[in-house]
Image (cartoon, rainbow, N blue to C red; front, side, top):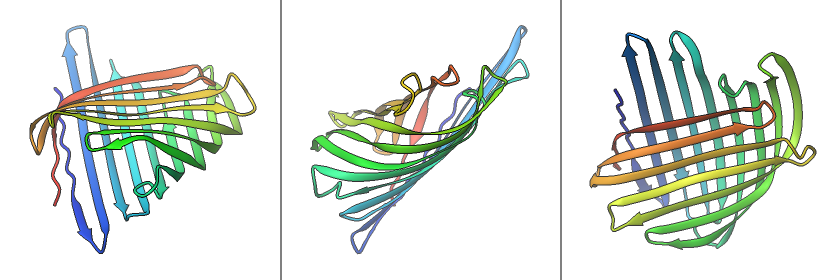
Length: 234
């Protein structure tokens, strides 16, 4: 069973826009040979003016396979962009905190800033590239049992896009590659891709694929969710 509900709201007052979104998906599989379930919740809040935008987002994934825990992953982040709506080149900042059972992350904080470039920005098509420096402080498990507490600076490269085809099909995604500046074999990959088919203005069929890899711990996860999405502005 998979269900999804998303609600969003927007408001315009004194050139300020507000946005909010919540989604929840889940799956349950039970047979004579075993059972599994997965719960995936996420939210996003934002406020923007012409020259600056602020966003906060978070998510929690929990799963079990035959009563053995496979996921208990939490992430929260805040970011801002400056001059995005008025310049092709703009600035960004980010603070992120996460814990992940599947990736063997006990605690991890990332914070930093950089510059971004709008390669393409028009109605129905958006493509942006960005790069910057992040400071990371992490508490990890290596080979599942070896504690590893360390900090490093990373180069963070991001590709972000959104395309709308005939006002029916929406393809969007955000992909990160974060390399340590001091250890060449230490890198992170975060990738999220979405495909939505609009049935009505407020209703769509949505599929989301999320991939994470933490090379330092040798762990990765892949989540694929699909369902109906309801979205409304007011």
